[in-house]
Amino acid sequence: MGVLFFKSQNCPRCPRALSNVEKAIADLDIDMPLAIIDISTAEGRIEALNNMVSETPSMLLEEELYGPDVLMDIEKIKQLFSQE
Image: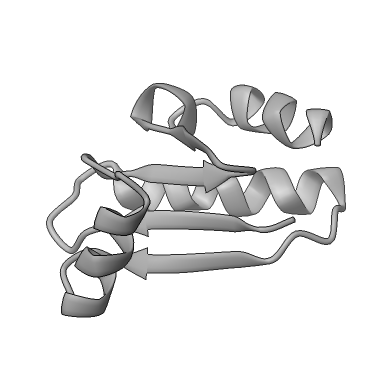
């Protein structure tokens, strides 16, 4: 299992959301690969389109897509990771 984190260069919420995801992984002490995809690049846009990402920040976990409503709350992220 791994996590795809989608961000963009001009996203004001992306740094905090990414920090929350990284902190949740560290706090739970789980071995979870984290791939960070910048949709500001051509490759990132293709990956976003392939995964139906329409906003940043977004996180793909086990084929489920989560947006800012989850990613801005570290406790919600921990709950998701604990379910896996």
